[in-house]
Amino acid sequence: MNGLLQRPIIGGVFGAGRYVLATIPCVMRGLHAVRFMVIEPASGAVLSLADDKVGALDDARAAIRANTLLELQRAQLQGNDPRQVELWPGALFEERPVVDRHRPISKRRRDIYAKCGGRCHYCDTPLQLDGIWHVEHMLPRALGGGDDPANLVAACAPCNLTKSDQTAVEFIVKRRS
Ligand SMILES: [Zn+2]
Image (cartoon, helix red, strand yellow):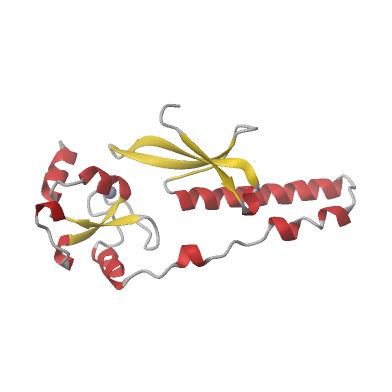
């Protein structure tokens, strides 16, 4: 597929390069965006598809864990020595550190999120407080817009990237036409 980027995922339940993270360009709500998927190239299996990388990796992890459990149960049903398979869960089910997902969120970011009701100011997409969204200058810095709270809103990544140096009004008018 044109524009498909792939990168092997190493570590944790993903092992050493058996799975890859792929990004696919797409159009969401009339805007160019990127979606993320985790695939197993050897089998062609798609483990997850999500709007953000963290979501795609989390879903893929859950799929791999569920599949690993099934394989273990199957091995035990087939009468394989359970002492052999018992060696695996510890290594396979090791939890990754949670620090990366729960980094502190600044008061400014919380305030902007609350002001926008947890949604993108432009397209109304619901945003996750700890997810990937941008603090947006309604009047861009390039046009003299400042950092005062009245000029700042929450925007999803596609809107933020598309809006660029347009003013909020220009952008909204262009999106509607
Ligand atoms: Zn948006």
